[in-house]
Amino acid sequence: MHSPWQVFWIFLRLGLTSFGGPVAHLGYFRDEFVQRRQWLTERSYADLVALCQFLPGPASSQVGMALGLLRAGMPGALAAWLGFTLPSALVLALFGLGLAAGATVLSAGALHGLKVVAVAVVAQAVWGMARSLCVGRARVTLMALSACAVLLWPGVWGQVGVMLVAGGVGWWLFGRGGAALPAHAPSLAEDGLHVPVRRRTGAVLLLMFAALLVLLPLAVSLWPGMLLALFDAFYRVGALVFGGGHVMLPLLQAVVVPPGWVSADAFLAGYGATQAVPGPLFTFAAFLGAAMAPWPGGWIAALVCLAAIFLPSFLLVAGALPFWEPLRRSASAQAALAGVNAAVVGLLLAALYDPVWTSAILGAADFGLALLAFVALVFWRVPPWAVVLASGVAGALLAHGGQVF
Image 1 (tube, rainbow, N blue to C red):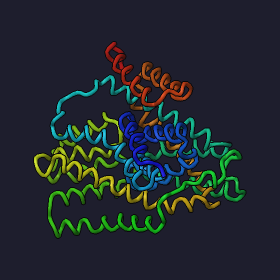
Image 2: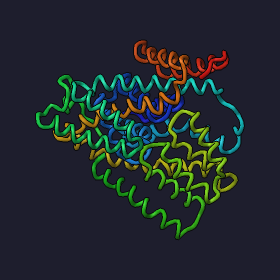
Image 3: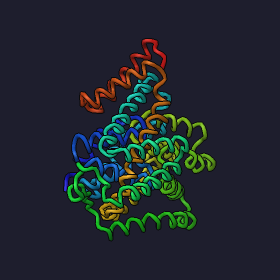
Image 4: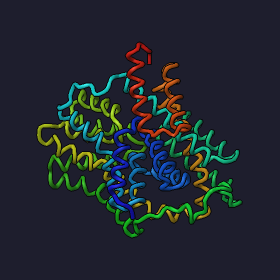
């Protein structure tokens, strides 16, 4: 078992530099933990991504929790979440309190440069994962068809449907001949995920997830109180949102604006600020809690909202992993996962185009900056944090020089 402090400091650095949204976060994680530190193999990482795509909640944060749990147990999962979440949550809570209201932390050009570098980060992830997980014509074709299907039918149900179909195709194509893995892939023994949580503990955590979903509304009706009502509302959002951060917007708006907890203008201002900070989009909850100041808003409400919206993900990841590892070891599951993993690469490829490329590459200067960032990441092996900072500076300089972004 490794030190949770090691996990915390690694994820804290990622939380300070991981701009670009959930898809880009998966790219940062892959570079850090598969390529540089080799905590797990490409296939195991893709399996984790596939599992978290099927679970409700923020997929990138759930992958981070899973990585921390596999490395240092339950304290490691908590350390990974704290490190990755703390920077953006702190900034957004300050903004919500009004301490940083109206302050421009970064120029528009620098923010655009950070969006451009996300193109390079996601492209690097697609490039590396495709080389490992899409070996052979069948997997490449499945990847391409998955990308096309997701672009034609966007939304969370389109993504889940594509992965289910790809799993069935993988089972049919690869399961019969036992060729679910490329010839050079590691064996199951070498590629296993050593989950330091027993299945009995996992079952208890899954029961806790379901029990809180049912009992919290009852508790609010029996013991009315603002903080308990906040915890219940944000827990339900975290437990019922499929598809990641952007999907939570209408649910959170319905939770906090009609009761008058947060004004509509403040809600939109906070969501805009959330796009400008690194880390998970779910830290928007910290802004909403802080923006309710005075009491019951402020730091206490920010902490309650933040903990409540992420708690379902913690319970689901820690509860599902003990059952996931034995399942993925079966021959049929391996065949299905071969198809699912190809589809995951296809999903990342589709996301590389929309929304990452379409929102960031607006001209020749953007394309050139993204290309240089990609070369620096893939061929020069420059650390991602350095590429992120350089791209932000380059974006600010180009905007200052009169370039049109």
